[in-house]
Amino acid sequence: MQNKESSFNKQDDVLIEFEDVCKVYQTSKGQVNALNNINLKIKKGSICGIIGLSGAGKSTLVRCINLLEKPTSGKVILNGVNLMDISEKELRQKRQKIGMIFQHFNLLEQRTALDNICFSLELAGISKKEARSKAMKYLEIVDLVDRKDNYPSQLSGGQKQRIAIARALATEPEVLLCDEATSALDPTTTSSILDLLKDINEKLGVTVVIITHEMRVVEKICNHVVVVNQGEIVEEGDVKEVFLLPKSKYTKQMLYPNLSNFDEINSRKIFRISFDGQSSYEPVIANLVLKCQAKINILGASTENVGGKAFGQMLIEMPKDENVLEKVKSYLDEIHINYEEDIENEC
View 1: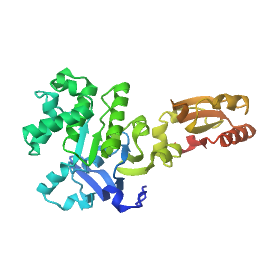
View 2: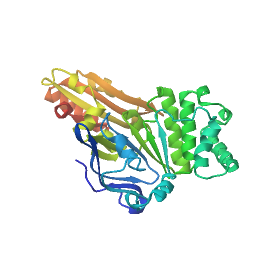
View 3: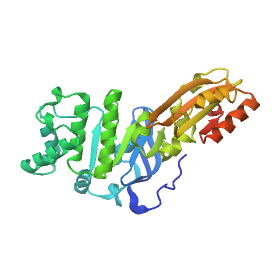
View 4: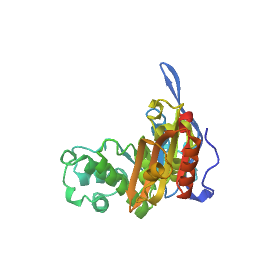
């Protein structure tokens, strides 16, 4: 269960706050509790990842930020204003400061790239001349000025998403909501879109909230992560802290979804070791074998070499020989690598 105490101490730093938010749907089969007593604070200027499997409640949670889904009870506070208490007119004004991009882009096929961006500005009452000027500015930001006269059918998936991002930014939002924005893209294009979102966050100061079921998305650009399961927040905090030392069973299952498939766990030990900027030239696995005489089996790994430094995690299996295990732990402590043992018993 979540802790109501925020990891952010300064109220002035909070852009979005949920207080005891619940969302209940009435269906032909009965009541569905999509969100249960959600308490959450999202800091201004942060990139917050909301992660969970399909049906976890993450999309409902994010759509409650701009009241596309109105909570059954609780408070949704944006910049100190409870959106649940304001009029429809005031809500429409607030929504202009909340940009949103989607998995399938939602571009108007009969409009060019430039005109798609202008559309949101025209709806906000901005003149066509000013709208085109602003649209060109945001086309530059997403690096697609040369595609301004192309229609969506003439653009790749990544280019469509860049246009959608430019359209969302055109109204100068305080927060950008990304609903599985990279799920329809290939890995290379996904990486470029995530780099763009990070750049926008840093240069424009826009708070970014990303819904995803992919750990690599959160690892790449988020600084805060919220793990959602069955309509509840089961874990949240700094990305580095949560990924190096996950506390909930659900988070561990997301990190290693195939762990439960391994047999013979009664005669083996499973370690999860986390690399947080150690030299990628350090022969960690080789030393575990040669120095510690550990017969290890690599069950899974998610590591990257960034500037000669290793980042990520590895799951290894080894015999339950206490002498060997002490050598392994001593070596990992010596080179300052975080590790956790016996995680199979918690999954």
